[in-house]
Amino acid sequence: MKLGFTPAEEDFRKEAADWLAGQMAGEFADIKGITKLTERPERRKEWEQQLAAHGWSCIGWPKEWGGRDASLAEQVIFAEEYARAGVPGRINHIGVELAGPTILTFGTDEQKAKFLPGIAAGTTIWCQGFSEPNAGSDLASVRTKARLDGDEWVVDGQKIWTSLAHVSDWIFVVTRSEEGSKGPKGLTFVMMDLAQPGIEVRGIKQINGDAEFNETFFDGARTAADNIIGAPGGGWKVAMGLLAFERGVSTLGQQMGFRNELDEIVAAAKANGAARDPLIRQRIAKAEIGLRLMRYGAMRMLSNTDHSRPDGAALTYKIQWASWRRALGELAMDVLGQTGEVTDGPAYEWGILPNLFLYSRADTIYGGTNQIQRNLIAERALGLPREPRGDL
Image (cartoon, rainbow, N blue to C red; front, side, top):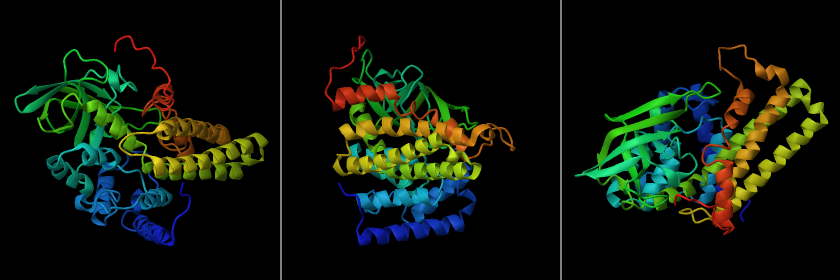
């Protein structure tokens, strides 16, 4: 496992850090420090295009598709410096980190030429249509249907928790395309233009006042017959490959965001005297240890993983960081005390730490609940007998 960086890689770090710092102090200073994913979406789309114009949008992609052919170490470095600079989360994270790599790995040459340039340029924003009201973390239970009608797929059904669908241009949807099929069989991975009759996006207000998540309804929505990745009925393999990309390099940037949050907690504890409480100090130390262990574990995972499929270590990562950050949110509120329960601003205009607490309540649910993650670890990593599923 590689824990350090070469002089050339550190030069790359300086280049990335200097460029990001210049942007956040200059033309895009107005978006620095934004934490809510729905805040100033048009300005953040402009930021996506600025990243692309200067070659920083998708550095791990091949050069022929707008990337830099960046090494794994360089991708890790950029993800870390991106978070360190206080730049808001990528509004096209789904396109750059999930849709793009999936098309690169499983798509045809024609699909690459059609979809990748818009993602790389920051002009086409993507979202993900996996979960459904009765199929949250259990992707194999989806009911949204797709049927081939001439040279088009027709889609009917409902997806939920589609992050940023209201500001997106395209969506990839896991659908059931074989009548009577169950479980992972008979699924097709469909790509669809959101700006069409038959697709309705409805926002879902969250506990912190944000509305990042959406319900997405499909009523006779259409897409071209060749806008599927993989073969009809082969969507499960593609979806599993995409989930492997979700555990990719961006995890290190995510951890730098966690670093910033923990530093905010330490600063608050010192400012209000909570740091004098031995139990608070112990919990801060535990959080620090947990964060460092996650970093080393993620670097080992990224060094060893075939990124077209998750290995045993990758399967443990989601439950690890989600549980850790939920506990971090609770620590933040205990450090703030009663002052963290009120705000002098408008409704739902919370500071960084109360917002961390409220948002982190969902960490152990989205992207696969902790219960589902334990099943995945048991069945796929440890090879234990599958949980009984009477309907499969």
